[in-house]
Amino acid sequence: KNQVEQSPQSLIILEGKNCTLQCNYTVSPFSNLRWYKQDTGRGPVSLTIMTFSENTKSNGRYTATLDADTKQSSLHITASQLSDSASYICVVSANSGYALNFGKGTSLLVTP
Amino acid sequence: DVKVTQSSRYLVKRTGEKVFLECVQDMDHENMFWYRQDPGLGLRLIYFSYDVKMKEKGDIPEGYSVSREKKERFSLILESASTNQTSMYLCASTGLYQPQHFGDGTRLSIL
Image (cartoon, each protein chain N blue to C red):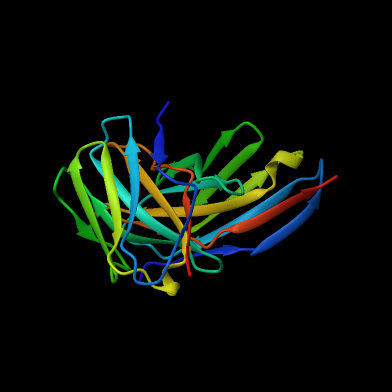
Protein backbone atom coordinates (compact mmCIF):
# COMPACT_ATOMS: atom_id res chain seq x y z
CA LYS A 1 0.00 0.00 0.00
CA ASN A 2 1.34 3.44 -0.94
CA GLN A 3 2.03 5.50 2.15
CA VAL A 4 3.60 8.84 2.99
CA GLU A 5 4.71 9.49 6.57
CA GLN A 6 5.78 12.90 7.83
CA SER A 7 7.58 13.88 10.99
CA PRO A 8 7.37 15.63 13.27
CA GLN A 9 3.62 16.14 13.45
CA SER A 10 4.16 19.64 14.82
CA LEU A 11 7.11 21.90 15.51
CA ILE A 12 7.66 25.21 17.29
CA ILE A 13 10.82 27.23 16.59
CA LEU A 14 12.09 30.72 17.26
CA GLU A 15 12.20 33.25 14.46
CA GLY A 16 15.56 33.17 12.70
CA LYS A 17 16.29 29.52 13.50
CA ASN A 18 16.58 26.71 10.96
CA CYS A 19 14.46 23.57 10.90
CA THR A 20 14.12 20.33 8.94
CA LEU A 21 10.94 18.44 8.17
CA GLN A 22 11.00 14.78 7.19
CA CYS A 23 9.02 12.69 4.72
CA ASN A 24 9.28 8.90 4.25
CA TYR A 25 7.33 7.14 1.55
CA THR A 26 6.60 3.70 0.18
CA VAL A 27 5.01 4.81 -3.10
CA SER A 28 5.99 2.67 -6.05
CA PRO A 29 6.74 3.10 -8.88
CA PHE A 30 7.95 6.56 -7.91
CA SER A 31 7.35 9.50 -10.24
CA ASN A 32 7.95 12.68 -8.26
CA LEU A 33 7.71 14.23 -4.82
CA ARG A 34 6.39 17.68 -4.03
CA TRP A 35 6.38 19.79 -0.91
CA TYR A 36 3.37 22.04 -0.43
CA LYS A 37 2.89 24.89 2.03
CA GLN A 38 -0.60 25.47 3.38
CA ASP A 39 -1.29 28.67 5.26
CA THR A 40 -4.18 28.65 7.71
CA GLY A 41 -7.47 29.03 5.85
CA ARG A 42 -5.86 28.73 2.42
CA GLY A 43 -5.27 25.98 -0.10
CA PRO A 44 -1.86 24.25 -0.42
CA VAL A 45 0.72 25.88 -2.67
CA SER A 46 3.55 23.96 -4.33
CA LEU A 47 7.06 24.81 -3.05
CA THR A 48 9.27 22.29 -4.86
CA ILE A 49 9.14 19.21 -7.04
CA MET A 50 11.75 16.44 -6.99
CA THR A 51 12.07 13.74 -9.62
CA PHE A 52 13.98 10.48 -9.30
CA SER A 53 17.28 11.89 -10.54
CA GLU A 54 17.29 15.03 -8.38
CA ASN A 55 18.95 15.14 -4.96
CA THR A 56 18.47 18.75 -3.98
CA LYS A 57 16.28 21.62 -5.05
CA SER A 58 15.99 25.09 -3.54
CA ASN A 59 13.27 27.71 -3.56
CA GLY A 60 14.53 30.75 -1.68
CA ARG A 61 14.98 29.77 1.97
CA TYR A 62 13.42 26.35 1.33
CA THR A 63 15.68 23.46 0.32
CA ALA A 64 14.29 20.02 -0.42
CA THR A 65 16.39 16.86 -0.60
CA LEU A 66 15.51 13.45 -1.95
CA ASP A 67 17.12 10.07 -1.38
CA ALA A 68 15.32 7.75 -3.79
CA ASP A 69 17.21 4.71 -2.47
CA THR A 70 15.98 5.07 1.09
CA LYS A 71 12.72 6.73 -0.03
CA GLN A 72 13.22 9.75 2.17
CA SER A 73 12.87 13.47 1.59
CA SER A 74 13.47 16.46 3.79
CA LEU A 75 12.50 20.11 3.65
CA HIS A 76 14.98 22.47 5.27
CA ILE A 77 13.91 26.00 6.13
CA THR A 78 16.70 28.49 6.70
CA ALA A 79 16.46 31.62 8.86
CA SER A 80 12.79 31.09 9.60
CA GLN A 81 10.31 33.95 9.47
CA LEU A 82 6.93 34.39 11.12
CA SER A 83 5.32 33.93 7.70
CA ASP A 84 6.74 30.40 7.55
CA SER A 85 4.13 29.36 10.12
CA ALA A 86 1.99 26.92 8.16
CA SER A 87 1.37 23.26 7.48
CA TYR A 88 3.87 21.58 5.16
CA ILE A 89 2.59 18.64 3.18
CA CYS A 90 4.67 16.02 1.37
CA VAL A 91 2.97 14.62 -1.74
CA VAL A 92 4.28 11.67 -3.74
CA SER A 93 3.13 10.70 -7.23
CA ALA A 94 3.29 7.22 -8.66
CA ASN A 95 3.96 6.62 -12.34
CA SER A 96 0.48 5.35 -12.95
CA GLY A 97 -2.75 7.28 -12.79
CA TYR A 98 -3.63 10.74 -11.60
CA ALA A 99 -3.87 10.08 -7.91
CA LEU A 100 -1.45 11.61 -5.45
CA ASN A 101 -0.34 10.21 -2.11
CA PHE A 102 -0.51 12.82 0.64
CA GLY A 103 1.29 12.93 3.95
CA LYS A 104 -0.68 14.27 6.90
CA GLY A 105 1.53 17.31 7.15
CA THR A 106 3.82 18.96 9.66
CA SER A 107 2.41 21.99 11.44
CA LEU A 108 5.14 24.60 11.92
CA LEU A 109 4.82 27.55 14.26
CA VAL A 110 7.49 30.23 14.19
CA THR A 111 7.43 32.45 17.28
CA PRO A 112 9.02 35.88 17.84
CA ASP B 1 -1.18 32.80 -12.68
CA VAL B 2 -3.50 29.85 -12.24
CA LYS B 3 -6.64 30.62 -10.33
CA VAL B 4 -8.92 28.02 -8.81
CA THR B 5 -12.01 29.59 -7.31
CA GLN B 6 -14.37 27.87 -4.93
CA SER B 7 -17.77 29.49 -4.66
CA SER B 8 -18.01 29.66 -0.88
CA ARG B 9 -15.40 29.95 1.88
CA TYR B 10 -17.86 28.97 4.60
CA LEU B 11 -21.14 27.09 4.34
CA VAL B 12 -23.61 25.86 6.95
CA LYS B 13 -26.26 23.33 5.98
CA ARG B 14 -28.68 21.02 7.71
CA THR B 15 -28.72 17.24 7.81
CA GLY B 16 -30.53 15.79 4.81
CA GLU B 17 -30.07 18.83 2.60
CA LYS B 18 -28.65 18.53 -0.91
CA VAL B 19 -25.44 20.57 -1.01
CA PHE B 20 -23.58 21.87 -4.05
CA LEU B 21 -19.94 22.96 -3.91
CA GLU B 22 -18.70 24.72 -7.01
CA CYS B 23 -15.18 25.06 -8.37
CA VAL B 24 -13.95 27.02 -11.39
CA GLN B 25 -10.44 27.12 -12.89
CA ASP B 26 -9.17 29.58 -15.45
CA MET B 27 -6.24 27.69 -17.01
CA ASP B 28 -8.01 25.28 -19.37
CA HIS B 29 -6.80 22.32 -17.29
CA GLU B 30 -8.08 18.89 -18.22
CA ASN B 31 -7.84 17.41 -14.73
CA MET B 32 -9.83 18.53 -11.73
CA PHE B 33 -10.08 17.05 -8.26
CA TRP B 34 -12.16 17.24 -5.08
CA TYR B 35 -10.58 16.49 -1.70
CA ARG B 36 -11.68 16.72 1.87
CA GLN B 37 -9.23 17.65 4.59
CA ASP B 38 -9.73 16.62 8.20
CA PRO B 39 -7.44 17.10 11.21
CA GLY B 40 -5.13 14.13 11.64
CA LEU B 41 -6.22 12.56 8.36
CA GLY B 42 -4.74 14.91 5.78
CA LEU B 43 -6.19 15.29 2.31
CA ARG B 44 -8.30 12.47 0.93
CA LEU B 45 -9.44 12.25 -2.68
CA ILE B 46 -13.20 12.11 -3.20
CA TYR B 47 -13.55 12.27 -6.99
CA PHE B 48 -11.57 13.47 -9.95
CA SER B 49 -12.28 14.23 -13.58
CA TYR B 50 -9.87 14.10 -16.53
CA ASP B 51 -12.25 15.51 -19.11
CA VAL B 52 -15.69 16.99 -19.56
CA LYS B 53 -18.41 14.55 -18.48
CA MET B 54 -15.76 12.09 -17.27
CA LYS B 55 -15.35 11.21 -13.61
CA GLU B 56 -13.48 8.71 -11.51
CA LYS B 57 -13.99 7.70 -7.89
CA GLY B 58 -11.26 8.52 -5.46
CA ASP B 59 -10.63 6.96 -2.08
CA ILE B 60 -13.80 8.12 -0.30
CA PRO B 61 -16.62 8.66 -2.83
CA GLU B 62 -19.48 7.37 -0.67
CA GLY B 63 -22.16 9.99 -0.10
CA TYR B 64 -20.82 12.26 -2.84
CA SER B 65 -21.33 12.74 -6.55
CA VAL B 66 -19.77 15.13 -9.07
CA SER B 67 -20.63 16.92 -12.25
CA ARG B 68 -18.40 18.28 -15.00
CA GLU B 69 -20.49 19.77 -17.78
CA LYS B 70 -17.89 22.34 -18.80
CA LYS B 71 -14.10 22.07 -18.78
CA GLU B 72 -13.59 24.93 -16.34
CA ARG B 73 -16.19 23.89 -13.78
CA PHE B 74 -16.28 20.88 -11.44
CA SER B 75 -19.08 20.51 -8.92
CA LEU B 76 -19.24 18.35 -5.83
CA ILE B 77 -22.68 17.27 -4.67
CA LEU B 78 -23.67 15.93 -1.29
CA GLU B 79 -26.93 14.16 -2.08
CA SER B 80 -28.18 14.06 1.51
CA ALA B 81 -25.78 15.83 3.85
CA SER B 82 -24.82 14.14 7.08
CA THR B 83 -22.89 15.43 10.09
CA ASN B 84 -19.86 13.27 9.26
CA GLN B 85 -19.47 15.29 6.07
CA THR B 86 -18.54 18.37 8.08
CA SER B 87 -15.07 19.14 6.76
CA MET B 88 -12.83 21.40 4.70
CA TYR B 89 -13.33 20.72 1.00
CA LEU B 90 -10.55 21.56 -1.44
CA CYS B 91 -10.77 21.68 -5.21
CA ALA B 92 -7.67 21.39 -7.41
CA SER B 93 -6.83 21.42 -11.09
CA THR B 94 -3.75 20.45 -13.06
CA GLY B 95 -2.40 20.34 -16.57
CA LEU B 96 0.27 18.05 -17.99
CA TYR B 97 3.49 18.02 -15.91
CA GLN B 98 2.18 20.73 -13.59
CA PRO B 99 1.55 20.73 -9.86
CA GLN B 100 -1.99 20.63 -8.63
CA HIS B 101 -3.29 24.14 -8.06
CA PHE B 102 -5.68 24.35 -5.16
CA GLY B 103 -8.53 26.64 -4.32
CA ASP B 104 -8.75 28.17 -0.86
CA GLY B 105 -11.29 25.63 0.29
CA THR B 106 -14.87 25.58 1.52
CA ARG B 107 -15.35 24.96 5.22
CA LEU B 108 -18.65 23.09 5.35
CA SER B 109 -20.58 22.53 8.55
CA ILE B 110 -23.54 20.16 8.63
CA LEU B 111 -25.83 20.70 11.61
